[in-house]
Structure formats: structure tokens, C-alpha cells
Amino acid sequence: MNAPLPGHAASNPIARSDALLAVAHVSLEYRPPQRVVRATHQVSFEIDPADRYVLPGPSGCGKSTLLKAVAGFIQPCEGEIRLQGLRVDAPGPDRIVVFQEFDQLPPWKTVKQNVMFPLLASRTLKKKEAEERALHYLEKVGLAAFADAYPHTLSGGMKARVAIARALAMQPKILLMDEPFAALDALTRRKMQEELLLLWEEVRFTLLFVTHSIEEALVVGNRILLLSPHPGRVCAEVHSHQYDLHSLGGVAFQESARRIHRLLFDEGQSPETERDHDFNDIRIAY
Ligand SMILES: Nc1ncnc2c1ncn2[C@@H]1O[C@H](COP(=O)(O)OP(=O)(O)O)[C@@H](O)[C@H]1O
Ligand SMILES: [Mg+2]
Image (spheres, rainbow, N blue to C red):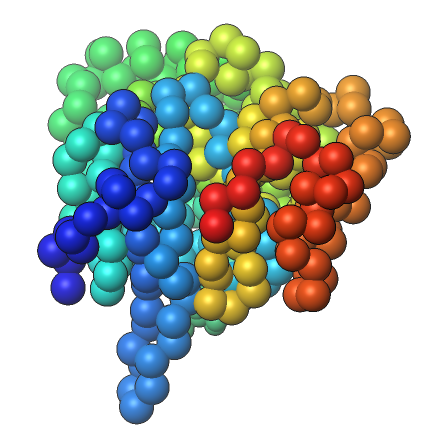
């Protein structure tokens, strides 16, 4: 059932009409034979242009499922998702997903051909313009010199950068990333976080980013939505724009990480108690 529920705007305390992406009371289910798995329960949040919005949370809380719903691969059984006011009911070139598995790059295409491919397949651009656009974004991720290389000759970090260039080249309204750096070693992962932030400074794209790492959420995000374990429900939204890679290890950063951990995992801890502890960058959604 995809019909909007009556009274959505009124019953969603954070609903605004000018948001780029509005997720309103979205429940998502899988229906394998003879049972129903509810992945998220009435999740609501809104993303503004140029937000770096992060969904952290324990495995199985429905992060990937939510991302797939925003991408249009699966439909909510309750609630609705709107992009610039239009209901999301199918995948589209305005929402591009970067997954964890960078071996999604077809190995028989060069780096440049990989970046050009979605532009050509979606008929967004003709060959010459697609080539120019591909080279522009490869330059932005520091891979202009590898335009004619094949994916198997690249490191994991470089493949990640190709995947990001390929997604950004489509100039989506929102870039969706599902644990994009999870398969990388710790140092490369940190470098990729830094590069993603630098790229954002330059391009100012809108990002919805899924991670199981609280630390990564604080570094990458300006806002973080905390989802309770299975099925995912919103427990809180935290502002984290004050942190970047330079904050790692700092006292305030570590304290925020600890508090998020408590909110995610301590079932007895109510948001009210957190408020008493002077967690004043938190915005309680429910
Ligand atoms: N294809 C599927 N069929 C049935 N259940 C699924 C499927 N994919 C995910 N699930 C279940 O939905 C819940 C949320 O999964 P997922 O969104 O992948 O979580 P996360 O990304 O937060 O780890 C989990 O309980 C998972 O087992
Ligand atoms: Mg996942």
C-alpha cells in the first residue's frame, strides 16, 4: 500500500515542505515464504540540499533496506518517500547508489568507460559530452592519470574513487552510499573519508550515507539518524557538523561517540535522561 497516510505532515514533528528528500512514516517489509520480516517501522526524516545525512546502526536495523527504498528498488508497505515533492516509486538517475563492492566495476571497461557508461546507458549525454564529464569527475577524485587503466590494476581505494566519480558524474539530486568504505583497510578508509569530505567541499552534493561505524558517522555526517535495532525505528537525530577527521580522538568527539553508542544500544536509557546529561546537540525525533 503506497497511499499517503492521512495527517502525515501534522503527525511528523520534523516534516517541512522545503526538504529535498522527505521520508514519512516509512515501514519496509520483506515477505519470504510463510513469514514477514519488518525491516523498518514508521521511520521519518528529512534531508536538505547539501546535507551529509548518515544512518549508522547495528547490523540488521534496516539501513540498507531504507537506502534501497530511497533508491526506488523497494516500495514502502506504509508511509511514503518524496524527492522534491514527487513520490519515489521506481529507480531513477536522480538517485545513484554506491555500494560496498567495488568489483561492481565491469573489468572489461577502462576507468573512463566505466564512468561514462551510466551517462550513455541512461541517454543523459552523447559520447563526447559523456567523455568530458567523465574526465572532469575523474580529475576531481584524483584519477585523471588512470582514465585508460583497467579496474584490476587499481587498489581498493582507487576503485572506490572510480565508483564515486561514476556516481557524481550522473549529477544525481542525492548520492546514496551503503557502507562504501567497509571493505577497505583502516588507513585507506580514513583517507577515503577525508577525500569524500574534500569532494563535498568542492561539489556540495547531497549525501545519504550508511555505515555501521559510529566514528565514521560523526566524521562524515552533518546530521545523524539513530535507528533502534530490528525493526529500525527512529530514536534520535544528532547534529554532528562540528566534527571532521581532525576531531578523531578529541574529548568532545569521543564523548559524542559514547553517547551515540548508549542511545543505540542501552535499551533502558531514555532520551530524556540523555538530555539531563547536557547532550545539547541532539534533536529528539520521537
Ligand atoms: N532479501 C531479504 N529477505 C528477507 N529478509 C531480509 C532481506 N534483506 C534484509 N532482510 C532482513 O531485513 C532486516 C534489515 O536488513 P538490512 O536493511 O540489510 O539491515 P542493515 O543494512 O542495517 O544491516 C534484517 O533483519 C534482515 O535480515
Ligand atoms: Mg546493510
